[in-house]
Image (cartoon, rainbow over all chains, first blue to last red; front, side):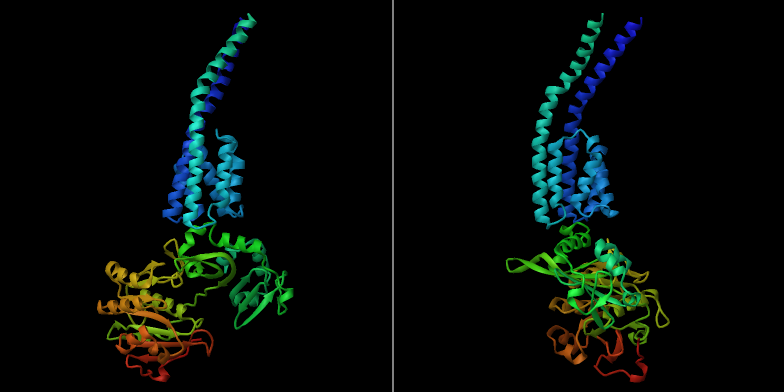
Length: 172
Length: 320
């Protein structure tokens, strides 16, 4: 009886682990999309609205999904409270704090970090160029992420379940 | 002063906080030039400032404003959003919260021969705007005739308090005073100095019945306000360009009184300038107020009527 309960537990937890890993592959393209949308909104705010950066961050942060929005909201908070001396620093700090909670990877972080270096420190034309460049980069990454999702999401989900099943079979 | 402190980088803020309070109270300008000592202007004097916040006349003892600080200051002043200041960079100054103005100089970038902006900004001149309520008290009695507000030109050399006077006139007209009931006032604030708007909201008290068109070119702004806000009085700072003159004409023909200011030492000098002279000769203005610094900022030197005759001297009280 105890063995049976153990078997069920093992099967359940192994499936959950597989499911979690699989979900990570599903989340990445979704969050990448949110980040893309965020940057496009930022472009509008900067180029057409000439909104000061901290307010643009807040506007954008509120309108995209929470995981990505948090980054911008926190960066805005840092800028307003002067805890960050520059836009670059505010983004870096925000990424340091919240990046681990997103499904995004190092490549995305690098794109955002290099954008941060120029954000707010040049005229509109230049800002637009840099924002478009970042968006193009992220588009490439998004495609890649979608391909990976198609490939791995299913695989990890079934792998978790089958792995659990293997252990159970070995147990009996 | 608090607003200014808030936008300064830590290091500069610390030095200014350490300044003797007598200096702080009368601070007019804070001048920062890259690789040169920090300079303050207060009252009629100027002096360098040491790291400890003491005044010194020796340049080498002054606290040196480094390139690093210049970048920081610009970033703070622009709220990390240089792109939002394109117009300001073209004109060479930035207005910040509280209506203070920061003049900038550096390398000018040209596009097709026109100034496109300033890059490598190395010189900053922080001009502290002081609000002086009641500055217009002494001139208000001269601004009315038969219950109507008279069109007035305020003539003054730089830094004699003409913006302060205009603002106080706006406030006084808008609130109403012992000389008149309250009026609808329209302000075209091209340089955000009169009302010191931040995000469209006047930071200075310009009265409850005042509409401000912030950062709008004067000529276009005057026409817009006349059409959209039907003001009784239009208040405009520093007219000078040809199109401003046309707009003043239009406004007066539309039955709106215009109170504006112009740079100049006296009425005769202004009358010789092409656009203003034209307006003066056609008797567009009914009052001319000449300011000077002879008895401190905001001294009212003389008031003339429409035929350029001085109004009785004894009625012209001095404003201190």
